[in-house]
Image (cartoon, rainbow, N blue to C red):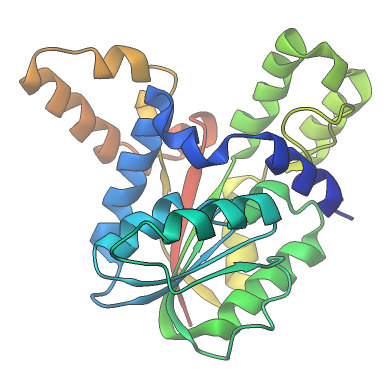
Length: 271
């Protein structure tokens, strides 16, 4: 079972509020994610940003005129969002402390879209993931959209080897073996990313189909720009920069790129 206390403690220590703006990897992730959302979100949609942290995407979408409800497990991040919300002209409608497996504070068919940018990184057990998506399905209107990010199996598992080089106290032979066999990472330390789950694309497709969603597409978020972000944003020649950004988008649905290039996103509709 997922240790939600470990996840809460992790986000209490992390600077999630500024993560997407502190470096170029975050910048590319944010830009590509917003591009996806602008492509698919219906006008004037009522959106639940579930696992939305301190509200980075919530505030951006509210500014565009969407009605946004923010929910997260972390009391610290929700408090940051509440404080930020007081400064905004276009405000988030609500900021709630919520576990993604229990959305009982929301009504049936309340939302046109749900953003799930976080919970699938952490929910270790199949039953927990299914319960989360069952609840998302319940609060979505008919044909409502879901945008769910996940860390693909190969990308996530290989990253644990890199984690050993940087933080050897978090990784040993046993949990390294476990993540490659099961996609589950249990951090040995109370520092760093906690309770990680890394599914294959096939697992993600089966999970959402079982929970009554129709797949529109699965895309890599940073794609072929993954781990090249600093170089890309240093390009002075606009024509080359634009071509590379176009290629990141054009190749983002290739399976081999999804599996190996950091975060990915499932985009679907409620059946």
